[in-house]
Amino acid sequence: MIAALLAVVYLVLKPRSPDLAAHIFRSELFGREGFTIWNGQWYGGHHTPAYSILSPPLGWLLGPQPMAALSAVSATAAFTELARGHFGPRAARAGTIWFGVGSASLLATNRLPFALGIAFGVAAALALQRRRRLPAPILGVLCAISSPVAGLFLAMAGLAYTLAAT
Image (cartoon, rainbow, N blue to C red; front, side, top):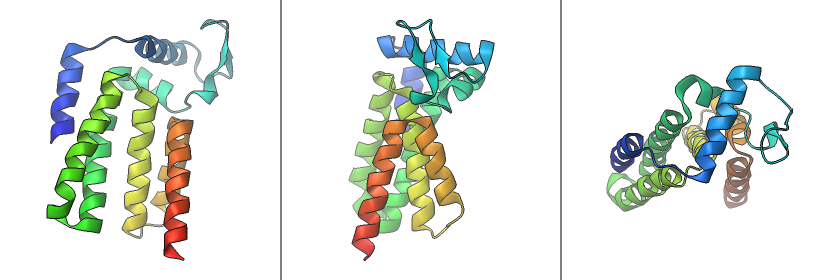
């Protein structure tokens, strides 16, 4: 699995970016203060829930980089099952490889909450494909509170799915 290999490379090399500093700060902030609404210590202040509700506590528990690596691998594993369920194993192969590379690229750019949101979003789509009606919306909510952008993409995918089904 290419995403797992690239996640290990990411964890070994630990690339730095401006975004990584923000994730480390938010994770440490959660460790010091728990859930907050506002923090004035980062670029003159920001509303902390607008960025991610779930990423700071998970980043504090696991570390932001291991959390992201697990997210990329989990998203790729869920996407592989989703694509195989729709297209079959042979036809899904190229798409799953590209998805693995794409999810690992989120690590290189340190889009950590988005990677977490994508993992939950793809898992929600997989649950829906497998007709697991209870976990699908729960995973969808976890997607949105991990990353509002990932939540928006999941909402668009859900709308497309609904329109295609009618």
